[in-house]
Length: 193
Image 1 (tube, one colour):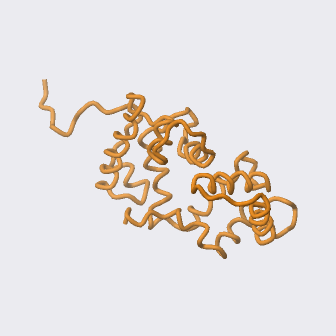
Image 2 (cartoon, one colour):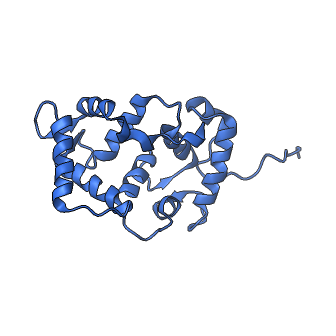
Image 3 (spheres, one colour):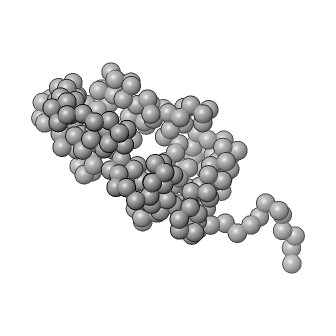
């Protein structure tokens, strides 16, 4: 029988070495270890299996696990890299990396594009943009008239749909996001620095 260090203990399924995750992301080893503590807290909030389920994710983000939320669903889907209905620790760290202040803006723009591309077609269509605008307004508890929402969608398409084909491709999105940096202001969490 060998000596077991105090740092060795049973790891939850999906656990990955903080040193490896730090090399693959913008996070330091200490930040990855701190994220593991957060991960453990979230993953044990409802279902005690060491994995983050959609309800736990929504509870962590919005303090409500029951309310249907398109925005939370989209973020969860993008964090669930393996598409197995749960977020493992490595997926959590790799996905949170997008919000690190040192992550290149091009990666943030690409993530935001995937967030708005609800159907995964490689384009943002009018209805997808409208659904996301409504979801964000709903989450912010802001109420706008249908006309105001349509104006937001119309103005966005007027500025972003450069070739006028009725959909925004990733290159058009990149140009639009570059001209409208406020669009990505929530894509950086300054306290991660």
